[in-house]
Image 1 (cartoon, helix red, strand yellow):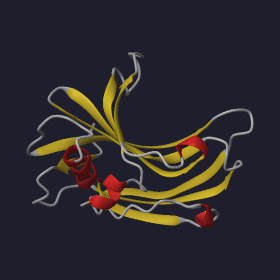
Image 2 (image 1 turned 180 degrees about the horizontal axis):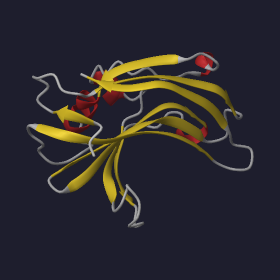
Image 3 (image 1 turned 90 degrees about the horizontal axis):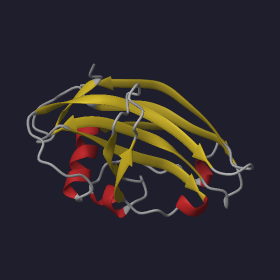
Length: 171
């Protein structure tokens, strides 16, 4: 079941405006890998596509650029099966800034403060396509299949405490 709709030509209003509050409450030491953000899922040409938008990162990933990758997820009972073509589009990346997405990075100075986001998911997918991070030629309207938030850390000392609030998808 679709949670929204994408329109890659951006000419008509569709249900693709994602709004939410995101607070990083506390994180482990800056040299320990951690990252948090949102990823969105869609499908065209018979292939799943995902755009992952890191909002905050520490350690080795803190300066990661945008990237194109593939995610293999062979668990048949999972909503992520069989995986996806993935565009990683960090809020701080040159590509996200060039596309003028208006998705701000959560910096160390923002820890403990809720950041509010309001952006069109169609524009995120279009940016990933324009920057050659995704393939295919989607046209018309496409189902937005999912919006997911993630928190990842590494090692025994890695942690991130986060809060996500008031998630909505509207026109």
